[in-house]
Image 1 (cartoon, helix red, strand yellow):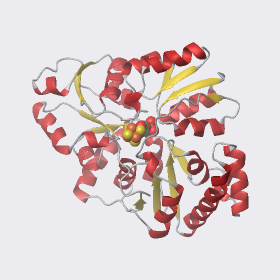
Image 2 (cartoon, protein in one colour):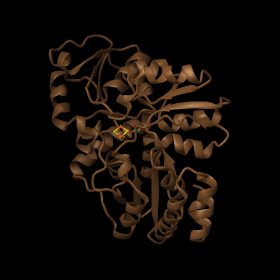
Image 3 (cartoon, helix red, strand yellow):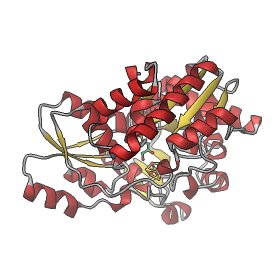
Image 4 (tube, protein in one colour):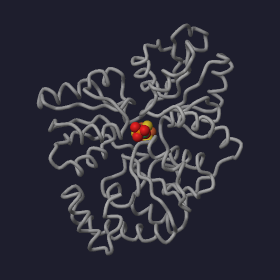
Length: 348
Ligand code: 13P
Ligand code: SF4
């Protein structure tokens, strides 16, 4: 990715990290982080590993060790095609599982034992089976933020980058869209569909142009409010407000731009505006700020995803040294889950 990954010594790693991160990481920590990053980059070559880093990784990790950074869709594509012996996923479990589903012959490693996600834990395979029994033949679109057994019950997966595009391509009046209530409502608004909540769904209320949604929520994005946006706009009227589609619909509507994490990274780089508010996981503001020193990312964010936060440089070093934690999946479930991911990749 950057020359930090290719640095030939700890001193060079430290110098390049300092150049990139400026004062984002306390000086007392930066040298120690550079030492760990240098060692990770050395072992990575020795073990023929590739490191994928989600856009939410903390700044020191994000800028020093991943070979690729991106959103769920971009990293899934890279994982699917990787020839490396080991894929180390600096992200959460459902992302590492997705890599294993798509590329089962590689060893896929997650640097934390758990690293969950409130959306992924909001729904089970049984829940999906009950909805399918109630609505036979209705296509089930499932957000990638789910575990393999839920993906296995699904017709097609989607991510924040392609959900609208996928729902628009389905040749059906009614669609089951799981498990993020807010993402589904945001998609419904863009596709002109009517939202039916699970309680109504089980009483059989879905009709033409309906979208049956689940009541799962991202514990980070559900915290943002329209009042946050209004307060910033009062103080800094020239601010461009961006919201991830997992935010409540009224927040997305009040924003200037909404898109996947990578879409927002690209939006800031391409924009001529000078000041931005990012309504998403707060490490991403730091990561964008480091790459765009001429722009101001308002540092109002206090919402860190506790699951993404489990992934540290220290644990990534242990992960690479000891080959842990390896993602293992039941083969029958993996094959079924792969179909829904393959359909998504073909349709996006
Ligand atoms: P992206 O696919 O946009 O990176 O989102 C993943 C995620 O977990 C957002 O909370
Ligand atoms: Fe899950 Fe939300 Fe964390 Fe993304 S930010 S991993 S959706 S809990």
